[in-house]
Length: 367
Ligand SMILES: Nc1ncnc2c1ncn2[C@@H]1O[C@H](COP(=O)(O)OP(=O)(O)OP(=O)(O)O)[C@@H](O)[C@H]1O
Ligand SMILES: [Mg+2]
Image 1 (tube, rainbow, N blue to C red):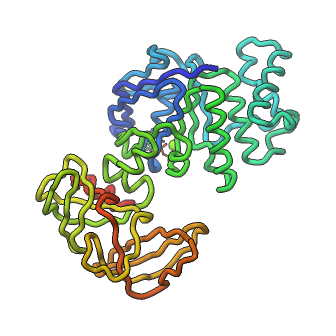
Image 2 (image 1 turned 90 degrees about the vertical axis):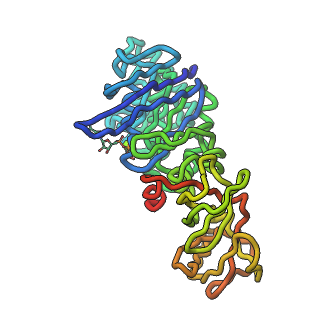
Image 3 (image 1 turned 180 degrees about the horizontal axis):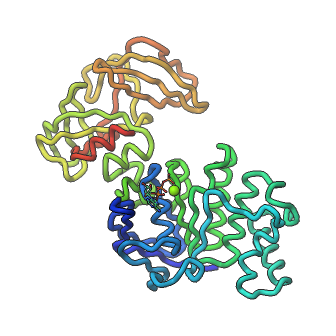
């Protein structure tokens, strides 16, 4: 199997006057594991349906392997799609499910069966070929769906939130399996999810989508550590958020003055003196500082509670303005205060300052 590149050029979708997808350009190289990450209703499924030919866009073009496929229906495109529901055939055996797509291609029964067994071996289900889907676990059914989709040898495999029905442990296991399978086959994977953990662990690159627009395309590290917009910063991972007016801009840093105090962080290039801005810092980059009230980026807070996550501990605090500030601390045996007054702080290089434009403030508040 060989992957192919995917290109969206000005793809737009308007439903009855509602723009579900604003004009979108995206290039995905052959063999990439690409995730489309965003909240419910942001247009992820619509984009994937357009790409695989189930939905005709209002405008724009789709190219696969450098060739326009606009005129091709879904079954003639080199794509396969796995829907959230999986849609396995309940009365057919696992082997028949996998072989199903090959029948329409005029492949002999014997060859279909042999090919299905090969694919079942690929997803480590050869021992289950004669079972029906209802005799399998959720993760096994998931793998049948993947094998069935790969049977038609797609160059691009589209997966629409395929793991959302599985429990946490199985989901984490399947992440690793899907990623390994993608590497092994070289097929381009386009993977829709609203789960940032999934996108960060599996992808070569991620498109972060909000309200019908891709706000950032980048590697997991880029999207997490250098978010391009407040929405991306707030949606991918957690942030402690401070607001204020920009009172100093110096090289790559900016300072804001707000109700909670004066804070400094790295800045995006578009920050200007006098802007309304947000400063965001990750809970794992926010720490307790003993009696250093005079340092940079320090503030007094009250500890309100602690949530144990196993290896980590969330310390939930509130500052004098009532702002909730969360600290994500390693559960390393040190004693953290469960209640009472404390001083928290963060390094300027761990915080990011971005200007707030109309829409952007709302995006931060929502998350
Ligand atoms: N056939 C349709 N007719 C009208 N509106 C539609 C149609 N399909 C989708 N929409 C609207 O387009 C928007 C995007 O829908 P889409 O299914 O792409 O979202 P999504 O990002 O996949 O969300 P989810 O994570 O909930 O699956 C939604 O507001 C939805 O109501
Ligand atoms: Mg969807």
